[in-house]
Amino acid sequence: MWKNTDCLYLKNKESILSLYQANTLGSRIHTGKSRTSEYVEVNDTLYKWFTLACSKNIYPGGPELMEKAKEIAETLGKPDFKGSRGWLDTRKKRYNVKQLRICGESGDVQGETVESWKERIPEIVQGYEKEDIWNMDETGIFWRALPEHGFGQKSRSCKGGKKSKQRITVAFFVSAYGQK
Image (cartoon, rainbow, N blue to C red):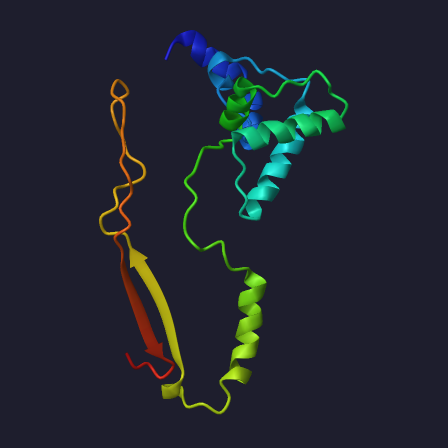
């Protein structure tokens, strides 16, 4: 590291630490510049909306985020706000947001539903022996499917093909008594 850079870090130690704790560092630590935006309220409101949406298993994409930001800016009386692709990329970097592949069924069941069934099951199974109470679950695998994500060289194009629908389905049964 250069001597000037060391001095810059030491000189701005308090502001760097406070930015780090607020999770708003982004790439500004390298330049030593701390830029403020006239749209801070738009950015903060959008981030709150985004975290609320994610907590409900709704993961908005780039166009949805830009459109929502424009709506928020209008509501806050900021008609000059553009909400460009560059603006979105900066916000994603600042708030550590990345594109994810959404998969699985873990988001299908609400916690209240699970608790409700836990309370009702003893009443439903009353009068049955444990060896007469069975649970079944099924799963499957597309055994000829190729991976959906992978690494490749930037200089070469990546081509896929039609996805294979050949599947193996397996059902699992178990009794409350523990029989297989």
